[in-house]
View 1: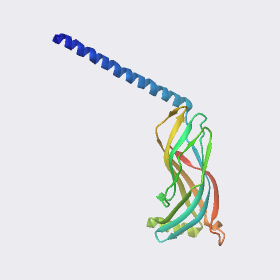
View 2: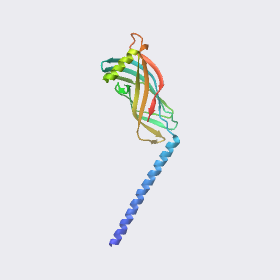
View 3: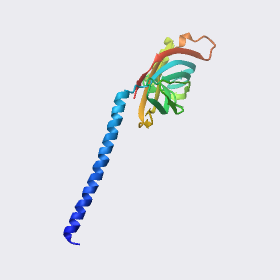
View 4: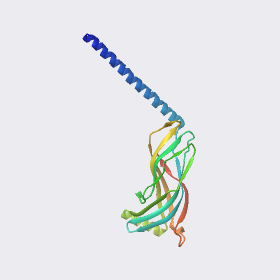
Length: 204
């Protein structure tokens, strides 16, 4: 075999490799374009969360340490009629002035179908949780005035399901304000239930 034959054989192989690569790129482009078109047509909406109520069993500030115990009722509605939602991870906790004051409570992974509503009632608590000095002072002052505003947060990961196609994971951030009026607590009662039915801010 001459060197000329080897050269033409090498060029032919490179052309085949290029064609295969361009075919793969074109195929991936078509698939991604189809997914984007379907996504744009369906126009997915974020889940809607509502903090329905909270039962307060304990809320005690001692120095720079806080012990608290809530049971909350949190509902989520999927507003989409063609898209399902996988909640792969969802941790619920409470904050005061942007400082976390309870341990995170994990909600079991679940799937939410079209237009479905899920309701969770986790316990959110923290025992002897250190609080920043300025927040400890704020908590004491708020309790003395009879009311404390905390934020119930839910952070997690979700995936969207369209037909048989499931997307990658997206971060989910939920913020629900809760106004706790300690002046409403009757003497001798250990637990008080507060009804909110307030909408939460949701970002994905």
